[in-house]
Image 1: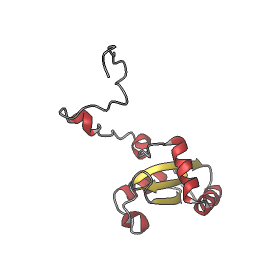
Image 2: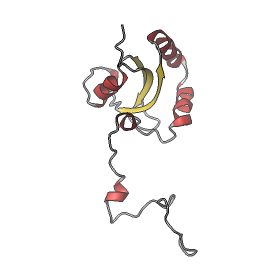
Image 3: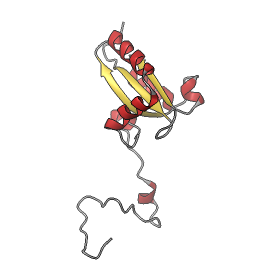
Image 4: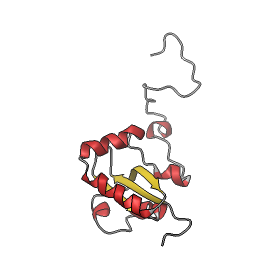
Length: 132
């Protein structure tokens, strides 16, 4: 039986963009991902340092979730990568958004000697005609 406060989900963990992938299913989603991140579960995820939640899908019941996990595991790697990148093109860790954790600022923001990325301007920043 599944607890009433449980979150049933199929998910993918990775160590980096286009890194090693693990597909799993659980009825204790937040707890399980937290355990992976802390290295508390022996096995594949700990061996390969898979601490980044890159994709997940919630389900109403375990039978459907297990069936979906089995289908995902049969798909080729490229298909799984496309599924991840459809909603998470940078392979960001999605766990902080689920738990309300604050993400640390990017290095360039905390290191004042490093130039800011040129590909994007901060929101509301005004650019002069001569600016790159």
